[in-house]
Amino acid sequence: MDLGQQDFNRILFFEHARKNAETTYAKNPLDVENLTNWAGVLMELSQFQSVRSDSIKFVKDAVSKLEEALKINPRKHDVLWTLGNAQTSLAFYTEDLEDAKPYFAKATQWFQQALDEDPDNQLYMKSLDLARKAPELHIQFHRQMVNQQVVAGGSSTSNTKVSKQKKNSDLKYDILGWVILAIGIVAWVGMAKSHIPPPPPR
Image 1 (cartoon, rainbow, N blue to C red):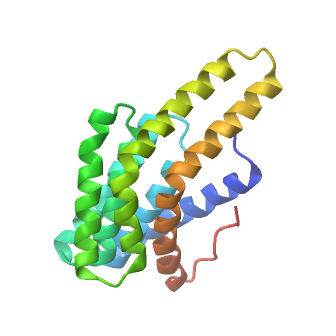
Image 2 (spheres, rainbow, N blue to C red):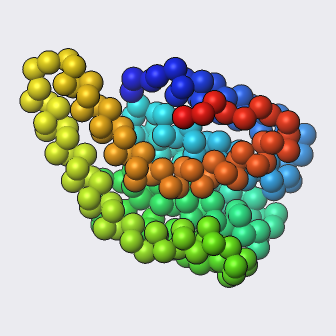
């Protein structure tokens, strides 16, 4: 993955935040807010991995942090909601729709549980609505990815290849962006409480 300066700065920021979360966890492993923020940071870092299996590993690590948080507070709605986002991301990282469907089903369940705990939360309502539409987006996303890879593979100029790679990356963010952006809100708020400087703008 070719990284611009802004992406590089964001990686540095989130790596710093991850280390901070690890330090906080060592001092207080029962801090639910820290576990939730840690998961959000891992989700952010997942999108910068060049290999899909590495991205999935980051998301699954985030899931483990969230499940740990739920054991401490089973009804914490932002943890339930972030788990929904994590399952959605795992679904999009999975190429075969049939294999992705269980992740979408879990995401819908988590979003519904979050909404049950906080019924007036507009973000949770939107997430639940998007989760129900996600399988169709999955088809469009992976079809477009294949088409762009074919076109890029047939190009004989490096400039064209770079352009296709950028479009590929932009499309990936369009699909996963609503998940990552929403998670980023949770992580940002939590880290602001810890007096961590905000990440560089995109």
